[in-house]
Image 1 (tube, one colour):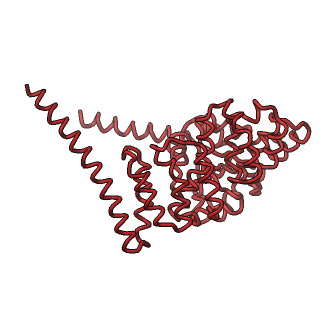
Image 2 (tube, rainbow, N blue to C red):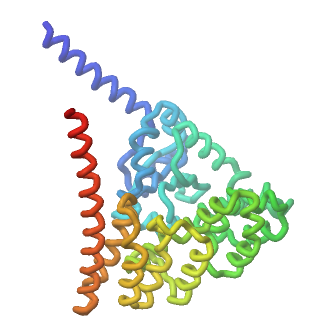
Image 3 (cartoon, one colour):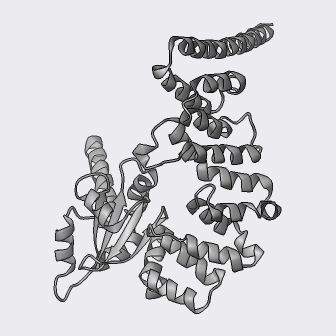
Length: 368
């Protein structure tokens, strides 16, 4: 009897889980053409929701696991949409990514049954937030033509920023709108964190628009504080400089000339970021790599990187960049690289012995 009760309990738990799971969005395994045919059934026309994801996109996986199965999501989408999911780096997903110019993940395309894009939603959200964002995106006022019309009618930050953000999320260039806003908006608007994050995010280091913003840096600092402003600026370029330093920029369509990297390194140096933070050195390291100055790179590591405590994961990333350079080093340079790592090892050995001694003394004290 006890085994029967346990078995029934397990079965009920499984059925309960399946019931809850079935309440969420019903993503069907259909080709794009099949989805359009199903959405276009006469008398029962529906919209199409495409979840554009990649295997490495953590927010994509989180939404699939925790938000899509929720009842509020299923109640809204299942009656109105044919919902499908495609990995943008595999199979038909590659064609969809190219056709609809999908470059950010997660992206959710909202199409009519003919496959024409109505609008899109970009980024992670809770199930309730996601439903509200889709409802707003389907409002004609919030389409790109609608937002453009509102901005042209009355040019202000209130109408311009949503238009610029929509352009950015649809992989279109929002810089003309953002620059026009920067020239005409009030300081509390153009120096807002929301505006600056988008403006710095889309403008290239050293471009006329970037320089125009940087000329106002003292005023921006006054609004947000130097530390926050510096972080916004540095976050814009940190990943690019890592790819340049790691020599993987081409793989991610990231290209900088040596002169442009020098401009980045120079600007980062002026920010006076904490030098005990490994990532603060990424601009200088990228500059040595792009200039193929391995001797200078090794010397920089010995002078600056060796002294950084190995408590930050980024320290290991920097050391990995130097190790990768060893493959193309001559014998003298290989010796210098070995000396660098040997010196770091000795530093940690001293630290290990110190703390080991402290632990042993503690043990003796406790023993007494």
